[in-house]
Amino acid sequence: VHDPAKATQHLDQIFDLAQTLTRQVDEMVWAVNPANDSLKGFVPFLCNHAQNYLRAANIACRLDIPATLPDAPLTSTQRHHLFLIAKEALHNIVKHAHATEAWLRMNCADHALRIEIEDNGRGFAASDEAGDGTGNMQKRITGIGGTLTRQSEPGKGTSITITLPMNVQSHLTDSGIPQ
Image 1: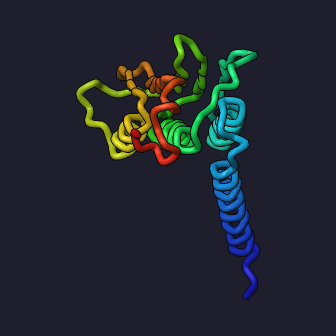
Image 2 (image 1 turned 90 degrees about the vertical axis):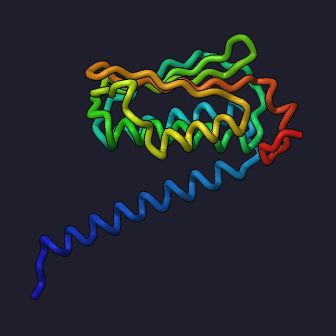
């Protein structure tokens, strides 16, 4: 017996899987392409990812990016870890925040890259334990010589700030291990 509703459901699942696989392949290709080992390779990719990911969750994405950023080098390891940290922060917004808007802000000042990801969601109390994702974010940023701070208040959203000194790449091998 042919069931059009079931067939539509299966086609939707196949389409969702194809989109996910395509996105994952795009991320892998971007991650291994040495032409992207700079802010000029990183910033547009992250902005595009944030907009697409949040749009799919019906969360408005606001970008606050300077018109020009220095063409500072990033190692592929730094770029990869920064992307995964930002990706986790965006995932947390979609999964936990119940937000309607999120902001991605980036700037370079005082020889450091600063990325802030903020939402207008439900927030949480400072006493709430951080989950595995937050712990992984902290390990990643520490591994590349940066810092991560998390601020939140119930009913007032959450803000994650990632700071990476731009002179770190001279002290790290491409694997992210200090020399």
